[in-house]
Image 1 (cartoon, rainbow, N blue to C red):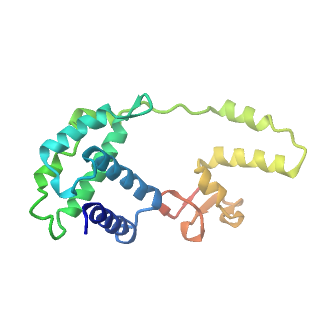
Image 2: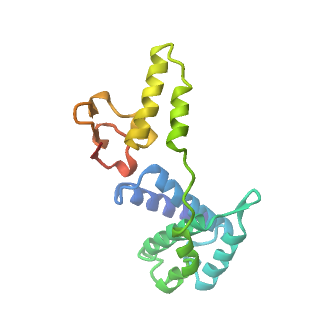
Length: 202
């Protein structure tokens, strides 16, 4: 088995583990795929077993200097990339043929400094429209058809419930009780909730 095929085989096994054993969603698995792709691009697709502490440090510097267009990668993107790689190499270090190649010490170097990590958690709160803005949006829809009435109702529902747009789009009408104002967000019944959770909101 050549190196390219071997690496592809390892990745396929790992992604299958994330999906079947750890229950990760497809979007989450794609984040892991992107992280590993960034590592392969940096190392020119060399053997995964050649991870060293020195290489990890140089890779972190590489991430700082990498960007999309002229915009550098954000600290949160670099943090997420390194966390995904840590997870991958921890799994790989337990596989036959890699136990003696990859050390826990080398994997630990795939982390950002504490100051950067602390800054990620204190990023500014994103701006969002206020109540008056939402009311103006709803009032801008002139009621001429049932679709116009539906659109205004949806805007009001989103505002009052605070639900995610995908959850509202997949919410059956019977899951809202107008008497108690309870909303049953049941992922097992097709409601697209975050992380597939099921809960009742108001």
